[in-house]
Image (cartoon, rainbow, N blue to C red; front, side, top):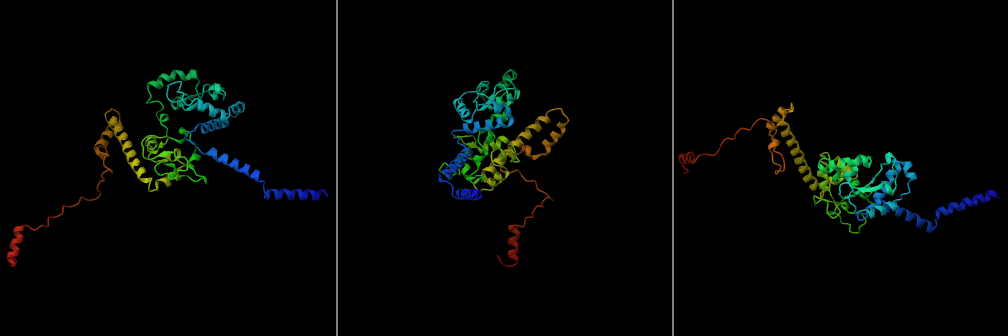
Amino acid sequence: MSQKKDFFKGFKNIISNLNPDPESEKEGTEVLDRKKAKLRFDRTNPWPAQARGHNSRIKHRYPDIWRASLVTVEELTEWLHSHKDDPCKYCGNPAKEIDHIQPLSKGGEHKFENMQLICERCNRTKHDMTEEEFLPLIAQILSSPDKVGVKEQAKLSLTAYGIPKAALKDKLNRPRTRSLFKETCYNTSGEYPVLFTLKYEEDRDDLISVKRVYMGLEDPTEYLIATQLFCGIQHWRVLCKQEWFSPYVTKWRKELKAKLRAFATTKILEIAQGSSQGAIQALRSIVQEDFLFHSFVEDDLPKKKVGRPEKEKPDLTIPDAILKADLERIGLN
């Protein structure tokens, strides 16, 4: 008898799985919607993504400190929002990054009492130093702003903006193309955020200027912009093949080529003016290389002709006097 009960009980479980409860199915859908919502990035409210990313890093790097911490994502989001207008306590620049006053690697705790918002440059320089170790360096940072943290001052990646890579993909996990850019986005429903601008040379209207990042990275291989600003090499390759995108990239490549060549020329001239062993080679380069005296107002460098020099073409025109004499001789004049 018990075997029959077990059989019918198992049969009922199979039937219930084939016909799930509408309420439970609705709850499952809501859970999936919440997960999808977490992947989307709202430029008007970047603090939840920043809070999730910060807590996730603490959890993986310092598991013991994380277990003792009571800072939730919701509380950290509120804390970031309440301090969003605070300046950096060290230099006065806009504060955008979370710093632990006592570094976690040196016994600090992941609590609000041990947290502060500082700018990117100070956060990169401070790293895992205590305040006592970092304070003597502040005067040096402020006195030479162009030499300390130049790359950190300019935002050259999505992580610097707090934007997750998931924002670059659609619902089917495919890398987005037109919908990423203000100039080509035709979807006005707001389902996917517009992140970039191709037209402007600086960030504007909360949009990232792709040209500014491209020129700032100074990478002619284009590997850095493909991996730091987009989904990777394949995503960048697909974009560069688009008719609406390729004209912009072509202009940026020529401008970057001019910029890097100008930098190289300046360095060669500096070496040539010195007394080092490379001065003679630098002088030889100045004399031999045509690019030192080429203006990049023109589109392309002048191409050197290869092979034997061309012979001058003979003048085949007949002088008028000879032509008149010949016409008289044959009786046509």
